[in-house]
Length: 330
Image 1: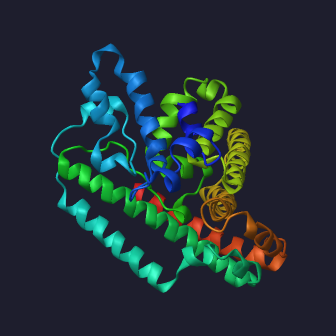
Image 2: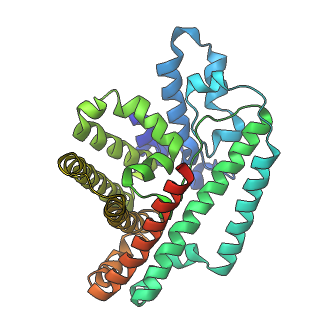
């Protein structure tokens, strides 16, 4: 699997000599290497979960299943064989169409991907413009992936397959922890990583080794040749380790002296605002504007007034989100 993922990289000899689209004319409308990472995940899953009980036809059907081939969500081999039943859902299709409409309206109102492709604009921008770009770009990025994945899920459901894991269960400003972001963002990929990387390497018994291996594989799986993705993986890994440390401190503090619900909510909101701040920065660097704008954002963040105002907005957002969850669950 690792050798196959390396073969998709721009610098790989195999890709340059055999799959050079300009020389061979094999490009087509959808380049082969764009779907290779997802194909690799499915082949690994069938190899580990299929065993001797699966036929070559079942493996090929799972690997090349049309509705989910190009985008996912990732369905484990055993789930693919288990969830083949009629799940026609017009309400799901209607909600997907509604999300698509909001994405179209958002991109017409604010062309964030065009701005991200011109990082020199952001390097000259003031703090308010950079902050506005960051929050809008990340939310539209999430909405774009939500539409892509849910259109694919719609097609699979109309075909009779119900993917058991839904990608993007919460958006970035409603993810109050880094671990929650990773669990809910590309949820099906996270599900695959837990089963095929994290648990085999020790899981919670060896969290440092298993977590580091997960992030290293995630960077290799996306695109090893892009430095911005290395920065994205590093920021997320450090944030996740810091979160686990503070979670342990928080648990010990509660055991020593239980706090009032309001104080607990304020403490949780403070940590959540910090995590959202880091997640927005990491995703702007990794999936939008890249490393070129990191210096500009760092300059504005270093300003106490700008960072305090942004933190206050995120704190209020987190406090209201936590309270809303308490009311909905209570």
